[in-house]
Length: 318
Image 1: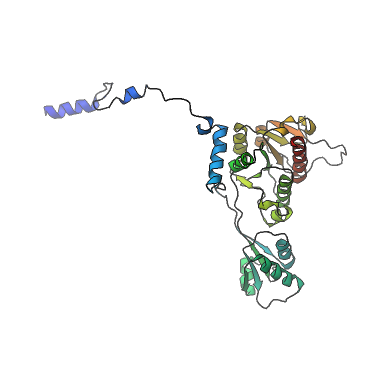
Image 2: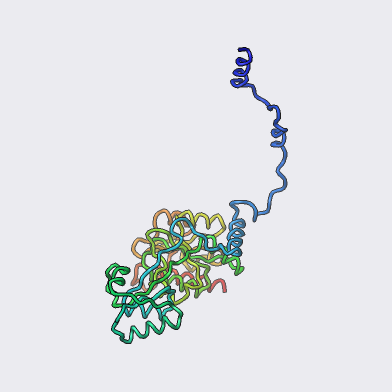
């Protein structure tokens, strides 16, 4: 009985201090942690983010998923004219489906020849099967399958700039839902030395056949990153040292007075109708307007506006 009482007392004691067998762990906690590590090794530092992105790129992991939806789903281009135009534009393709016993006109012959020249597999299928895979659309006996687009991570665009020893020049799109606008921005980024485009994961245009076509092939070399949350991505860019410049018709700064274009910058363009969303606008360091002496248009669409600012950036950096 006495032994049990002693054990209960030991379990319920409130006595403080080092316990037997601690090995002096409390003394070790008072020791210094050594010299401060370099910026590249400190988590959260902008140099650490860039170094991490470069390491992923070297190891072949540069296009890692940015959360849910980093890869788009495959897309079907249906109809004789659209298929021919997509093949002419060198849009990536995994297969061309051809209806059995199809009426072989000039467009069908050209589509088959273009597919053969590019090494795209030709698959013959009965009409009911083509009706099924196109959900009943008017495919006219020709269907082109486009592979899923593999989006970059927003950090990869910083690594792209670092590889080229350039100050980052990035375009982010807020609420732009027309794939042709996205394709036009990609084309302008390629033309004026930018390092990539960022689009939100939801309620935004993605790299569809229409975007590929409008990009005129430049989408093959300009990375498009998908952000789970655009506001948080812009905040991360700010912490990495980039100036976030939003384009707005009622902006406080005139484009020609924007000195930030010579340094690391991300240009944010909104939709033509609504412009920048409230949260994105509040995240911007500067709101910039593009002077329009003609006065005929109140605003420019995202593709045109981004192209104008990218040209001004390229002119100043030359």
